[in-house]
Length: 459
Ligand SMILES: Cc1ncc(COP(=O)(O)O)c(C=O)c1O
Image (cartoon, rainbow, N blue to C red):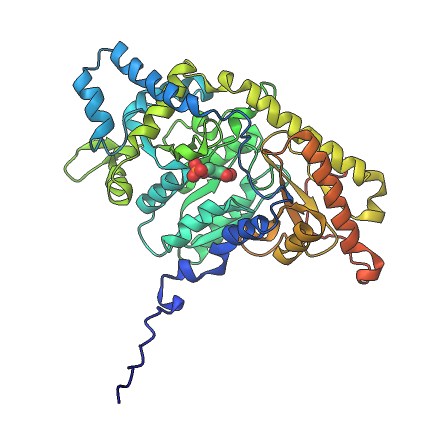
């Protein structure tokens, strides 16, 4: 009689994989979008996707052609234009000139093309900067908390230890950074870099004041750490709100600027850039920019960035006369209108003068894509699922952005891809959800939130 052999179970145990893959925190964004997608009729405040009302497929080929024409107009031979787009290209990219001109126009950042590396979005720029700047297991990344999940994930994937620094109402405070530096040194470790989003941060929409920017630069110089500045939302600031970036104020090369075209152009291009102008000198005495030196990491991560994406973004920059700030004024107005609609709707449903009754408050950012609402109950993923399923509105639990606990009773509203009418409806639904969660029948009254939040929250 034939006996069928028992097939061995060849499944891998997940615990055998890298700790970053096993870490449930690394799964939070996927779980969030999966939960949101289970309820397609729910209005989604859960992501920071840019406004997609202006997308037009015809523009893709227009911008690519615009860039090709630009190259030809500048005397680049046809054979080189062809090779640039079909062949393996320069590791650090080929649209640095366009980015350099844009940085000078839009941000007052003056750097040579050799200081710029074109990357697969902010995310690759962060991975490359971290890989290059962190050498020993005792090198620590100081990181604003709450923070964009992309930086925490990049550090986790590279086994880089992170020390969270809780931000205040005006973002990261220099004194808190100085204290964190001392604490890290006291443990015999080295603070190698500091990550922050000084303009309209994700998730909390905070802006670091000018004086604090100057002080952070002084600290970096005194303590010898690099500042990793991430700035996807600063472009949309109104002229009277606009502050110089840390990179524009940096005279020593202490700031590595991590740029993204996800919000200023379109995220599908997956294009961004790294600015590293500090000189690196080798034992042979050869001097190169940090961006040139880091191209070894870029080559091993992704070989180079997509030629088609570079051409499309290059075309957008050329078309805008390298002045993306002016070219995105209409878009900036769209985001401002959405922010105002969100703030107005919240105030209508939760009158600040009746805070004692509803115990709901929120901060009032002046720009960006997000704001934070504090609620008198645990706003975790299970609560988000109830909100989406029973009330037709999704959002992001703040807990997933905090590095060392916190944010349990707060949620992030991302309003960038909802029309004002959808925002009004979404906040009405959110009010229904909050009412249901706090109704006496569903549980005993809950204590007021204790974590600090922006003072204007009560306005
Ligand atoms: C703080 C922050 N940095 C960077 C990005 C964009 O990154 P990428 O260029 O990789 O899409 C985002 C997008 O949500 C963000 O919120």
